[in-house]
Amino acid sequence: MTEAPVWALGSMSGTSLDGVDAALVLTDGHRIFEFGESGYRPYTPDERAVLKAALGRWQEDDVSEALAVVQRAHEELLARFPQAQLVGFHGQTLAHEPQGRGTHQLGDGDALAERLGRDVVWDFRSADVALGGEGAPLAPFFHFACAQWMKAREPVAFLNLGGVGNLTWVDPLWPKPEVEGALLAFDTGPANAPLNDLVAERLGLDCDRDGALASRGRVVEGALELFLEEAYFRKMPPKSLDRDDFALMLDLVRELSDADAAATMTAMAAAAVMQGLEHCRNQPSRLLVTGGGRKNPVMMAMLAAGLDCPVEPVEAVGLDGDMLEAQAFAHLAVRVMRGLPISAPETTGVAAPVSGGRISRV
Ligand SMILES: Nc1ncnc2c1ncn2[C@@H]1O[C@H](COP(=O)(O)OP(=O)(O)OP(=O)(O)O)[C@@H](O)[C@H]1O
Ligand SMILES: CC(=O)N[C@H]1[C@@H]2OC[C@@H](O2)[C@@H](O)[C@@H]1O[C@H](C)C(=O)O
Image 1 (spheres, rainbow, N blue to C red):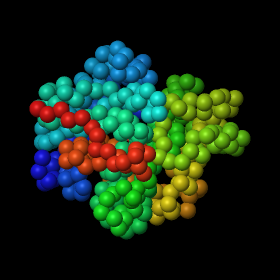
Image 2 (cartoon, helix red, strand yellow):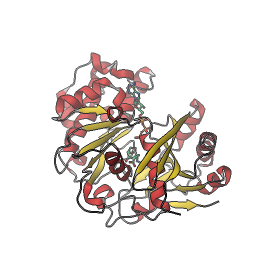
Image 3 (cartoon, helix red, strand yellow):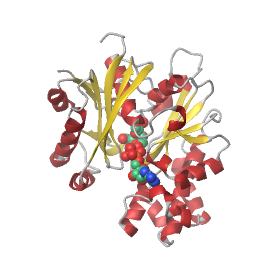
């Protein structure tokens, strides 16, 4: 592949199982030249149920029904972007145990490449895990490029509030030519996943939309303190989580009213981020928030109240918080094609920078 920028199409289907995002980025794997069109293909309720039933399954298990869902959704969405020169296909994470059985992103890159007639980069996380890394988060090298794209002159932090929260601290002016020392990244803790589970279990809702329930509740400090005693928060980064690693949160709020439980869980997600920022080399000049949690004003207000720096959605700097993860896998696909690392000791704990990913060529 030449060193010229290419229009890469990234796709991501996150832990909340709502659907697939796809976005075009013009990139040479180092710099972002332009952001292009994007699209979304929701999973139908039936498809979501199939995927939910497959959570926790591994490569050797029979997940053919879930695989058919993932392939169909991606084919339908990605075919809408004929201008894409290369595809980055994250797949659907079903299981993630980096220190144990590995990591499993469901998807078949060979089949997708054949259907789309484009080279596809996929299975981004396995090589890092095989080499002792956490396999996540992988967005940090893209966040570094974003910090340069927005011409940041001071360290900034990107926070993704998806099902799980993940944070990247980035120094865009790091003097060394390699990107690695400029980054620190890790999963902060649970974000929306347990809150979604709570409102689904009690009220049959998808999420606490706009923080409506939490805004009427009271944070129960005792439960919050118990939550923060979890060993995960004392563990030095890099570190990563599976969607349901903090299922115990539901027990901590079981006796509380719906509103108090939602307020307390929202505070837990925010407190996990604050704990996480303590691990950073220095405090960022601003915290730029991406993912669905940035639309929850209660979560955003709790973060702003607990931190000394401005807390803003990434839209404040002209980025698209609904598409940042899909864009990340476009950028990372180009890096994989060009043999550039997509993870490093500071982002996944792997011993040395890893390029990783599998390439299915047409
Ligand atoms: N208006 C809103 N108010 C409150 N919460 C919201 C709102 N919009 C989205 N969310 C929350 O954000 C979640 C979706 O976030 P996102 O799409 O970033 O997750 P994901 O990409 O699936 O997860 P991950 O990044 O962990 O893989 C929803 O499940 C919901 O909990
Ligand atoms: C194993 C896995 O799929 N992890 C996801 C998940 O969703 C958020 C958080 O947990 C993060 O670690 C990661 O995704 C982002 C895109 C990443 O790799 O940067």
